[in-house]
Each structure stands twice: as structure tokens, then as C-alpha cells.
Image (cartoon, rainbow, N blue to C red; front, side, top):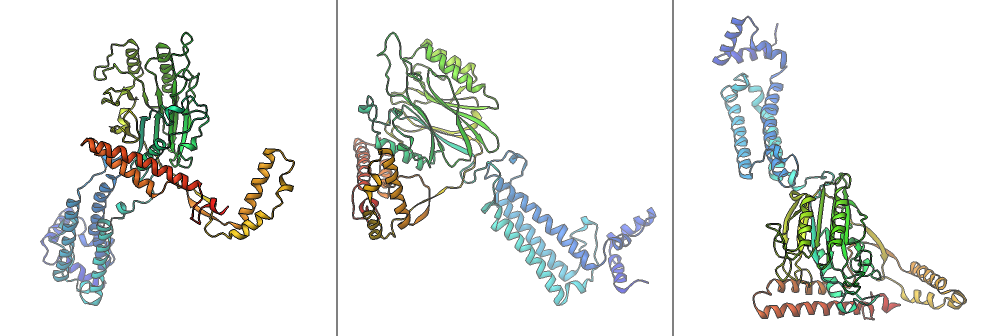
Length: 570
């Protein structure tokens, strides 16, 4: 005996259905069982069969197709090595595909609700359903089931296509991938022609050129430079790195001119300048990579830094400054240093930037009438280095600043800027990007004193009633300074609270007025070539920037009516 539901199912499947009858006739000829025997072994009820049909044949297939298309769009935003194997579909075609599938689904649901037949639309599945599944599609239960399925389908469609969380919020990026700015390091190079005034060259403790240093610092911040490479810094050992760039922003590697890096000519001691020169490489402190200086033999003004990413990729950025009057001995030292870099283990990418002063070289033909310059060109070719800068980098129309590399495919967006666009110099800036996956560390927060809510009367009372004579009399200057400093900080810690602030690395006196003056200078620089009047306006804007910066520095050190200044209260 069979129950009534099974009987109706068997009868409904084959009654009036030519497709099912043909299958039944073929099974009889082959001596196999009928199709309802197979269905009986797989399906326990009509409801389970319908759910199987909707979810696996229609619902999941549509979601899979849509997700593959959207994944293609998401992959196109970030560079991956496997992007060539992921199909990408334009947004209009993807929307049309989704719309067609959606309306086909609604039409199918309407057809099933009114005719209760799957035969004509899904014969490819070789499945037929009873024409009278009234118990599923009629009544309150059927309406609820149909509405839930449509709602589930619509919600998935909105999440995948319209909201698209894979693009709006891609989630944690792979290790070494920098989301937002792309997988590229932004590099800036320039011969800045001195960061100290020319009149301070012979001074053992020179003052820095505040205006030019601020121009370079602001440019690095505005252009989001990851690696800054400078030639002719003119720095000396008495100048600290923090006088130029804040250590929270950039990690600085320097090689100032000395007798070791720029040996004098014994036969003519006055031939070469003892002062000047100097090279520098500044690396952003928030880059998720390790950097260390590569020790090279002396005899040339050359500096190299080896980088290693979190994924284990190594590459070297090197800079070299060569005085144009140097001879074959300097050439041999530079070539020997470059060979040392290229022989390093596990290193496949080298990027060399510098002012080589090869004025007579034609880089299109790799030829020069000067024997020393031709020796440099031949050495570069022998080392497998390719020169990428083909446009003039000096105001006299010469290509003096070079970019040499053994990995040209990893260089993008190479551009030679306009004169004085970053700072005042007769050399043009060079910008390019290195294709390497580098992440960024989270900004470090530091503790500092909050002088806005301080009881100054109690603090000054504590300092006035301190027996300084008993504390400092009869002590050495160094010991006395330490005692004074410890006492001052103990009193400050007692009455002044600390707060956590984000480290931005910007000077405290560089406020919005300084930034506006710098932006005005940049805007007028772009218009300076239009007329002589525009050139004069740019010159005045640069002087105004210098005056505003000097005024802000004085206001910070001098007394003011601002109650937040420490100097006023102490």
C-alpha cells in the first residue's frame, strides 16, 4: 500500500506529459525502472523537492554568477598577480545580467503559482512536477513560502550587487598590500643645491636655510613622499637630523662630505671644495618595512639603503653625487660600489639616483666625446643598468640627474617636474613610483603635557618655595643641571596632567597661515611662465612665505597673550 500523496505525485508526473512518457518508454525498452522510482529514492516530499530546485538550480547559480562578476570588478581596484585569471565584467553588463535573471525568476514564480508546471522552462534538468501542487502554492502557507523566498533572493541581490561590500569595505588586506594608495612607493629626488646658506659653508656650525628646509618638508607632506633622496645638502656633522625633518615622520640616512667621501687632490689641495656636497635618503617612519644602510668603501659621495618588506622582498635605493671635474679614480670607486650592491645576496632590484654631472652624454645613443663620461656609460651597460631619465633635469638643458635600475618594469609614473616646484634650485625634481607591496604601521600616539588646565599659582608657588641654594650649591655643572631638571619635571608632573596626542611630526609653529602661504606660492609657481608679472608675483609669494614662517617661529619663542604658551606662564 502507498499513501495518497505518493499516489497523486506518481499520477501527476506522468499524466499528459509527453516528455515523461518518452522517458518511461525508453526505460521500458532498456529494462530499467521508471523515473518515479528514482525520484522516490531521492525525494521524500514535494516541498523538499521544490526547495532543492529553487536554492540549488536558480538561487545559488545566480549568486555565483553575480559574485564572479563583482569579484572581477573588485580585483580591478587592487593589483594582484592572479588578476589575469579572474573574469571581469563591466558594470552595465553585470547589472543587465542581474536584471534579466531577476525578472526571469519572478516570471517563473508567477508561472508556477498560476499553472503549477515546471516542464516548459526547466526541461534541461529532466525534471517534471505535478501540475496540481495546490497544497504548496495556494493558501496562506504557500503565499508565506513564496514571499520568503523572494525576500531572501532580493536581499542577497542587494548585498552583492547594489551594496557590494566587497568593494565598499574590502576587509583586511593581504600582508604587504597598501589599500587606498596602491602597491607603490612614491619616490622624490632632487639636487637641492644646499639646505644651508652659501655664506655659512665655511662655518663649522652653520645655520640651516629655514625657508628651503620648510619648502622641502611641506612638499614631502603634501605630495605624500615615501622615500626622499637629496643631493648637495651641504650639511655638516653639527647639524642634527631633527633640524630638517621630524624623526616621527622620516628616518634619515646621511653621508656628509668629508675627506673620506671626497678625497682632495694631493698635487692641488685647492682644486676641490672641502665644503658642500653631501647626500641624504629619508624614509617615511610609518612604512611597514625594515631599512638599513649598506656599508660601502669610501672614495665617493655615495649612499645606499637596503629595504626589506614584510613579505621578504629586498631592494636597494642608492644615491650618488659626483663632481664633474673628478677623474678616473672617482669613476673606479663608484663602479666598485655599484658592483658591491649588485652582488648582495637575495637582491634583485636596485634603484640608483644621483647627479652624475655627465654633461656630454647622449642617452639616446649612449655616446659621449669625453673619455671619462664614456667610461661611465660603458660601466652602466656592463652592470646591466638602464638609464630612465631622457629629458633635461637642469636649467641649462642638460640631463645631469640620472635614474639607473636593473628592474625597469618596477618603475611607474616617472616625471621630471618644473624648476622650483619643490624648492629653489637649478635642478628639476624627479618623481616616480616603485611597484612594491608595502603596508603602513598605525600612527604612534605619545603622551604630552596639557597646559590648558593647570593651576599656575600652585605650580609657581611650589617652584618659588624650593630651596634652590641647598639643591645646587657646590655641585658640578652637569650634576647641577640634572638636579634642576629632575626637580622641574617632578613639579610639572605633580600639577600638569598629560594627554595622548597623535604624532603628526609637524612643527608646532607651522599652522594654517604658514600652510596657506605655501599653497599660494605653489599656485603662483604654476602661473609664473605666463608673464613677467606672474614671475614677480611668485617671487613675492616666496618671500611672504619666508616672512610668515619667521614670524611664527618668533611668536613661539617670545612671550604672548596666548594663555596656552608655556613661556608666558613660566
